[in-house]
Length: 89
Image (cartoon, rainbow, N blue to C red; front, side, top):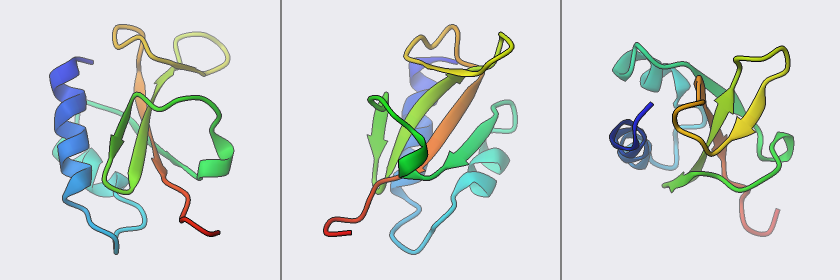
């Protein structure tokens, strides 16, 4: 994965708007060579690699037995999309 791909993914998420609860299907269609996973905010710990609209992006390395979050673009095998927690909830 490259910085430019990550930037394009973030730009795509900015366009999904508030009504889109799960943009993964659209991302899979737009970026067929990449893998995407949708998780809830409570299921992910750590800092996102990008924030995009109402979503945060994390990178996942699934090369070993247990998948782990990474900030290494070269090691990333999937993008995790997390909707930011609503303020006041």
